[in-house]
Length: 233
Ligand SMILES: CCCCCCCCCCCC(=O)SCCNC(=O)CCNC(=O)[C@H](O)C(C)(C)COP(=O)(O)OP(=O)(O)OC[C@H]1O[C@@H](n2cnc3c(N)ncnc32)[C@H](O)[C@@H]1OP(=O)(O)O
Image 1 (cartoon, rainbow, N blue to C red):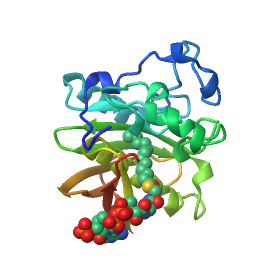
Image 2: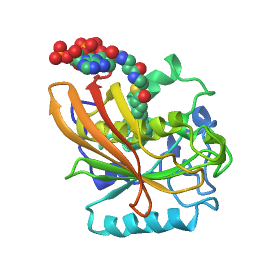
Image 3: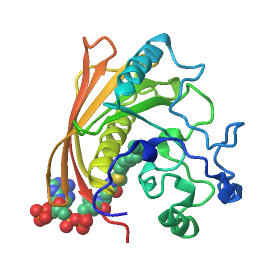
Image 4: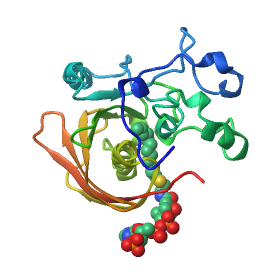
């Protein structure tokens, strides 16, 4: 785990890794194939609009320009080309005893039932240092009646640009996130969270992000952010 985290197809592909023992990770959900459950794949709660955008980016991924980011209940920064499987990464093994309990989950993957909370899939464009998230907020994210809570919007923005910064710079933490909320996001609608790295200065990673309706007609929010590189240890 260094100051950079290069992206390869191998690092992003689901990796069979349960040979190392599923027991410590039994709190994760596993699919019938024995792989850790990848939540960034279509499920029955996804609307047609969500599927359409997903399929659009899957199509764009065929030439390697974009890459779908698998999503588990663990944080992805522990995936690297050297350790494509989160279950075998030494940092995780260390953290497992110290910080992680069987009760912890990645915030955006905290609900068991499909469609109630954050339904999303991220696509990375490494050459543009850009991450887009196709996102459908569910009914448990309500703020004003019928609309997504601003905190949930902040969370999906933070995770989108956080994920982007991680792929570009390595392990980072959010130092500052500034959001202008322009138009409320209806629950159950589909939006595109479009974030990118603008520049890097030493340990500082500066990003921006816009949240658009699926038809591109409504700007829901725009944000700027500063992430700081923090090497493990
Ligand atoms: C893909 C799947 C994804 C899946 C999803 C995964 C993505 C998850 C993303 C979630 C990310 C989070 O929510 S992270 C959780 C929320 N964030 C936190 O809890 C961070 C708490 N804050 C901290 O730990 C710390 O303050 C840090 C790490 C931000 C910085 O501390 P530090 O490492 O000691 O660095 P420090 O010397 O203070 O600052 C370094 C430089 O940055 C500047 N700096 C520091 N903070 C600020 C600031 N707020 N605004 C301006 N500038 C700042 C300093 O002036 C300095 O500049 P100069 O003097 O060098 O010029």
